Amino acid sequence: MARGTAAGCLRSLLAGRTFCPAAALPSRFAYRAGMTSPHSRAWLTGVLVVALAGLSLGFAASALADTSARVGAAPSPALQAALRDYDAQRLGAARRAFERLARAGDAVAQYNLAVMHLRGELPQPDMARAVRLLEQAASAGLVTAQFTLGQLYDGSRLGRPDPARALAWYHRAAEAGSIDAQVEVATAYYLGRGVTADAATAASWYRQAATAGDEAAQYLLASMYEHGLGLTADARLAHYWYEMAGRNGDVAAEAKARVMARQMADEAAKDLADEQTRADRPGSASALAPAPPASSP
Image 1 (spheres, rainbow, N blue to C red):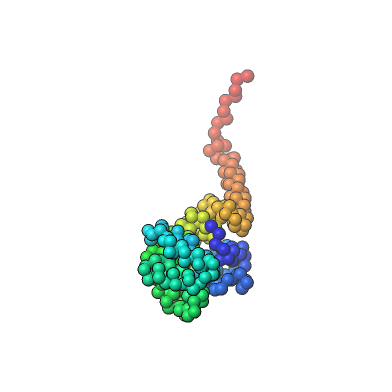
Image 2: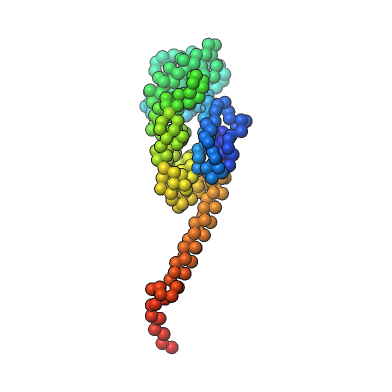
């Protein structure tokens, strides 16, 4: 699963940059950890960009899907009409419809009305009301709202960042199956943001996202296996996850998989040669073994 600008920035970092260029950051922050060597860049998360560019009514389709799966309510005709109004830039009509539906407890309407506040698309945008609406939608099980709250508390739009509160919302979304949230939870444990650093727990969450197809998580999991960070070092599994990330479009991972394949082949050949050398030494069991009888003509 591609992760947009954040994934591209993270892959650039892992390929050898020490920071993401400012032009690559949509509207928010890069978390920069201390990188001391090119070797450390191969496995350190370093930068994980989470952009509030995702807070748009473009999420409406996925939000509807989340509602059907998590909240148990199919989109009503009134909600569909409100979304059409928004798409047609009839923002006043969309706002009034979302407000009516939000008061009635429609989680998707609550989410979309919150987004209109966040984007300044209302006459009097209200950040506090946006948060309350998001919390209502999140409490109803809307995973998109849970993830969005994590983003807000992770950044500065609500004031000082609150990594612990951000992690709590990311955790809820991750447990509900959000791949992006699983990556955020993993990275929080990796860097110790809002929680005590725990590489093993980070690896567990990266594995969930990697198994679901997130190439950034696949690369990071491969690096953790390669260097034994939170996991027992395992070159075979490291190669497997680098290869999977490469198949999903990560060029750096594809190159890394080729390098590891050559290294493993060279090591296997060396081990075989060493074993043969030991077997051929005078006094070895194979050297002392009687020669097989000559075959009959």
